[in-house]
Image 1: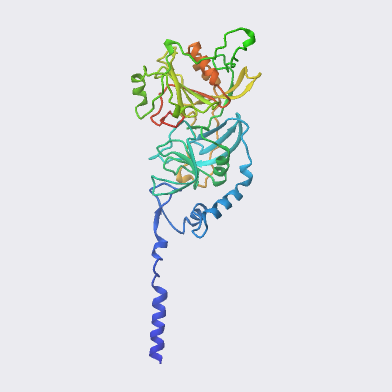
Image 2: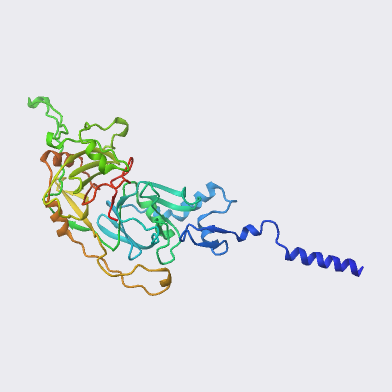
Length: 413
């Protein structure tokens, strides 16, 4: 009897000390989408994050969506008053949200590490997916994803350790990601710069003005009833924009292409337009609703001298549509102050005060004055102009990221 009890005791001890099937898997290491991809963390370290962004399996899709709708009920009611603009400062690890030219929110971010930096330049939201999983990094969750390049750069909710830690994406706090998701739409402008910059109102005679729609003459007037046509003079022949990885080289080859936009790719009526003027190419390009409309040559005074990169946005129309309120953001070529980007070793330490680079509308106005556009082209743009339209001036050409179904993408680094 004592021997039998002793044997049962040994079996009990062995059963407790040996791991049960499946427990080894609970300690595995995995690629975390919320820190640098070369770092590993255990399941226990990331349990809170995985619970936040990976709903439990027993919850159905309908339950998950219902809970998400309930959590974001208040922010979903927020509506933009005018054109939205997102500005991301790499040095400050901060994102600023502007609505109709006014700052309405700021939040922390985590951008790309040195080996995989976040690109600098002018972008826009080109697609959105609330429950996106990366098709590059082993299906890593990227909730409330807003894509700004087709090559994999996006804004999404994630872990913010207090320093750059992503593979190029811009990680947002969960609450801010939800708020942005409910406010933005495809086409929302995104500017990424080294320093913190802000929009400034600008008034210039060189900026486009709306062209009144000419009504058809009534039969009683006796005048000829002729519709207004969109014409461009021979020295400003409009051509379709064909963008690919070698867009800058292909522009000259396509210079004689006919001014035709296929019906399948027709721009959405009354959608805001984007105008891009490139000093490098001495050319102007127009897109509406991500669809190429036309392009035309321009003359730039002192073409060898840099103009900088400037983003003008048309706000509301004034005086019954006879004028437009414009804002401009000038994107610095180089860091304008010595503020250090927070590093991993600085986590938890007090950071330097954020320094916003003063706006420079004078530089933007000087760039405008160097550009000569034919009257016919300016009037054609005026006919398409709506609130939310934009004008981008840059020394650079279009990035190879500017392709089908995108707005103009200009990389400054």
